[in-house]
Image (cartoon, rainbow, N blue to C red; front, side):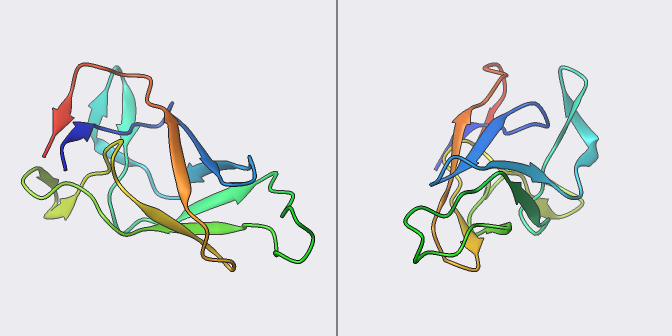
Length: 106
């Protein structure tokens, strides 16, 4: 699915409100001077409270889908419509605010 490309300044959260950040940004493709993210790169989640208490808090996430036509170093970029799952509980990450609205990709 097409969508706006996710870059370093985007707000991405887990289902419990924890903040997610890429562990390996892609500085080869930048938007407004901020690095983009590639599909295989893991993300760290901080500030997850794991509500209800029977669900463990999110600590990392892995993206499952990305662009199909636009790549960097042969790897798909992340877009606002990409999907990801958190570890260890399998809940989704939510790209809440993508700060750039100029570059979209498929």
